[in-house]
Image 1 (tube, rainbow, N blue to C red):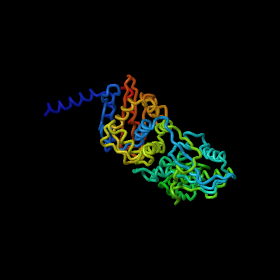
Image 2 (tube, helix red, strand yellow):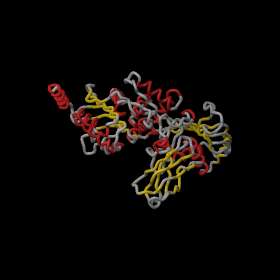
Image 3 (cartoon, helix red, strand yellow):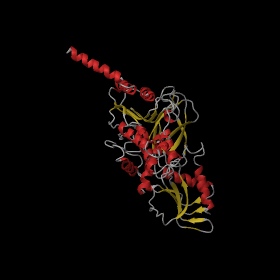
Image 4 (cartoon, rainbow, N blue to C red):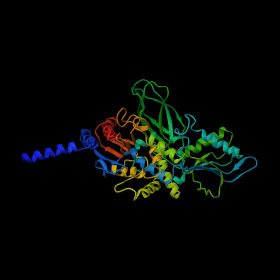
Length: 482
């Protein structure tokens, strides 16, 4: 027994000494008490040799939050192409007489553009200038009065709202804005609050854009907090919202962002408002196709007016990954479906993603329910990510794809990650964060010249998100040192 115990101890010590720097860091991370009841999936591979550098449950498919965006952005770049754009198209029915009276309707046909009026592509306070441009375009075509209605039609993308697995606690907040056939202003609304002394109830003083019929139950209190500690509850297409939590005390105008209940309907409403301000009367007012009982337009029989092009796939994919914009990721996913078969629904897009990667990676156990990672029903392993990352290095689009990744210690969602340590400026990674979920996946250019692909996913840790990030940084720094 003494000899047996000695041999066990010897081999344990030998194994510890034979581990490389990455394996040691992963072992230490795994043994940390905060991961006692957690699940970890990790893999790092040498892209030049294909050899595994270190691994831990690499085939364990678990929830990985926003690192899911790597699948939607990579697929969009590969299938649609970096320069692909979609369009929002304008048509009219009826006749335009010599007086400039349109004896019919204006139809706005959505193409799923998520960049329209986005803060990422517009100057602050100028996001809705496109509405003026649209009105000017109608005037240039001689339209002075619309006897019918302005009808917003995003039906080719369906009306399912949020994908499967999205939590109600997320949907009402700005990051829970769903993608539709017609999108604008990042599908957000801004609520402006006046706060008082600590413990007093806040006052909701304004909303922009103003949503007709929106009902908000406000339970937010003024508190000694440094920023927004509120949460908005609500579901897609519902005009009922409940906001709870805390906001900084003694502020005259504090902004809280929420998701837009119905972008299609609000876009029609806002456009008619601008038309009237420019002197173009709309007798039939604004209509949303989803809410109306009108017949679906046959666009081949309508008269085409003009179209507005979106930003490119590359431009949208950049912000999708650098700032982790959920709306953009879902928009790219919807484009994939729309481009494939004219159906811009989430499921249609997911079908394209699954078909594209089938045979290119080992997709056993891969479960995708959305394009952004907000779904808790997604399941992706470190192996799945590394297979994707490795495949993309063989693609002509590799440099474009990699340029969408933020750089540790320098930019985007990982601008403070590995700051002042080995990983700063060497780790290109997409981050992912949900409650009790943290993930990083991407590329590393190590100090020794190694080109590495990696994924580190952790579920159900027993500490704060900031604490687990600090512990994960040690693994990322070890990769940079390798």
